[in-house]
Amino acid sequence: MKFREFFSTWDGIVRENRFHRLVIGGLIISNVLAALAAFRTERSVILVPPGLNKEVEVTRNRASAEFKQAWGLFLSELLGNITPGTVDFIRQTLAPMLASSIYQEVMEDLTRQVEEIKRNQVSLSFQPAEVLYEEETDKVFVTGRLRAQGPGSRPVDTIRTYEFIVDINDYRPLIRHIDGYPGRPRTKEQLKNAEQNS
Image (cartoon, rainbow, N blue to C red):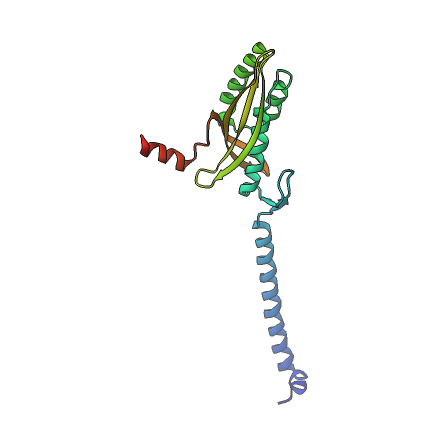
């Protein structure tokens, strides 16, 4: 049977119509599925922040380790370079990034430190030397040299580590944990080794 003759009959036209209806139905279903997939896909933003030479990825509620390290470095430099004239600016800068669970405690600690710095006219300067990210705990460790100096006194240098947990909330950094202490980073491995040696 020739196709041209077949499609010229009523039966051929009815079968062709049915076939086209199935194809159109399939196309509609595939378009609906593609649209649903597009709406469910979380968009990623690729950034190259200052101080980094490679891209970092940020989604609505997640970020790459490099992004968290960059924020850890920024926060350590912010907290480690305090003078009596910059303390209020640092509090204003840090406040909107703090998680509600640590906000009150961090602000009280900052207020205490601010009063002490203003009273003693001490200036702190921090020079970071190493930035680590621990995937298991999601912590960023920034270690460097902290120099404290008051008016007319000799500077005192110490090794200091700042520890942060930086989450992402609607593409913005949210600080869930801040700690600063003298010495090397207290990574999970170091704490385990210290526990075994004691």
